[in-house]
Image 1 (spheres, rainbow, N blue to C red):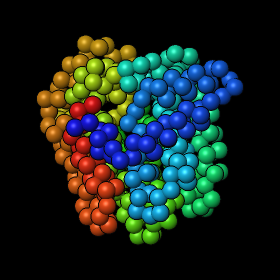
Image 2: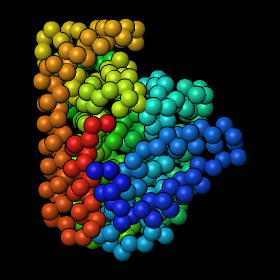
Image 3: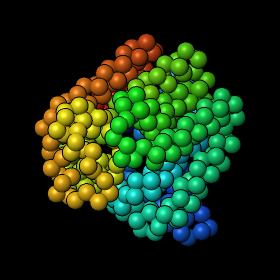
Length: 320
């Protein structure tokens, strides 16, 4: 089943969001515009705008108001991707050169800053003070998360709590905010907004764990980048944490650094795949997913609820 079929009734509104994003990234600076356009055209599932629109169906749905929120959240996400690629020194994303690879780190950082600024411009079109408070708090946490990720590179003495806190900031909070704020902006009751926040948080945690697993189990064609890139860049993900519980493998992982050869990294990746680290990571992802789906049971029945459940299930089964 294609991802788009899970929310087909939103097609017209999603197309509108896409056009709004194209307008949002326009800049009189050719470099900023072209780098932003490359990022936009690289694709992506637009999960955050989709969650905004679906959550808004639990209140008074008005695409004229909701679209500004959806665009703001996607711009924040895009900005964080550009900054991430600088921090991780990544040359490839979704099979295409990153902004920092095609231009340089300075252009990438200013492009990310520009996208953040544009998101703020769209936020000014939202009159709800609660929306502003949640969005600003979320941006703060995302920025802190980027700094922590940079500080934690090649720090192999991390624990599970460190990892979960990092992916909460990296992925889960923005997805949670998307679900919560779509409902808030549409005037849904507070208890429904709260439940949608927790749904988004659990889906976001599961999504990032699956991403981290796929970095080991996916092919370069599926991932759009070499497998094992996270470990080579010094990002300690859940499979790595679990694998380090095995003494011999722990010592091997501790030797990884920026100069580790492809031959050595491939050998370590194979050892991680042969351990129980992948299955244990999948198990934790499923636990978050089960919590998310259970939360939906308490929400009113509508077509948006059905789509949210199907998207959650899709996330748990995705292979790339």
